[in-house]
Length: 234
Image (cartoon, rainbow, N blue to C red; front, side, top):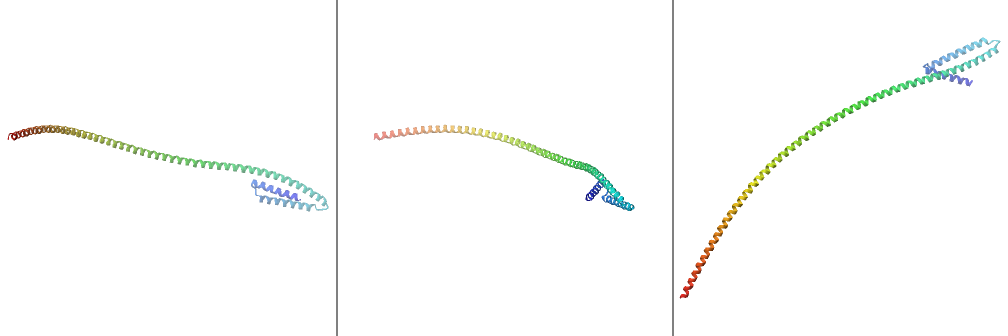
């Protein structure tokens, strides 16, 4: 009896699972099952009442046979319900897995598309920024090159001007030096001429002085001799 109840409950659970998998409400199924059981019970009672006559032993035997048949039918029904539930569960699981896979693939595709779009946008932005930076750097380089060329030109001009001025100053200095040297040479010549003239005059004066001295000495000597003679004569 206990095993029958257990089997009955298991059958109910299997049917409920099968109905749940196929989309039928277990509550509705349970209600229908109860109604069916109640109907079967009423029919059995009615049959029992009809046959409860002097043939009670025969009815009892018939009731037992009916019970046995009902038990076999219930077992068969349970097996069929179990098989149906298993099949329905497998089908539902397969359908659910297929749906989940499809949904996951759709989501993956969506995410991949979104990621690719985002990456493409980021790459475009980076490329645009790099191009802008390159353009800016090229502009700065051009500006610096132009400035350097201008400074070089200016420095070259200044150097040329300085060189020209230095050459002019050197030429002027050389001219001045030449003039000074010429003047110095002229002055030296003049001084030498003057010195020669002075030396000549000095020599002449010395000669004249010597002659005068000689004459004076001679005169003095003669005068001395004459005085000496006069003194002797006395």
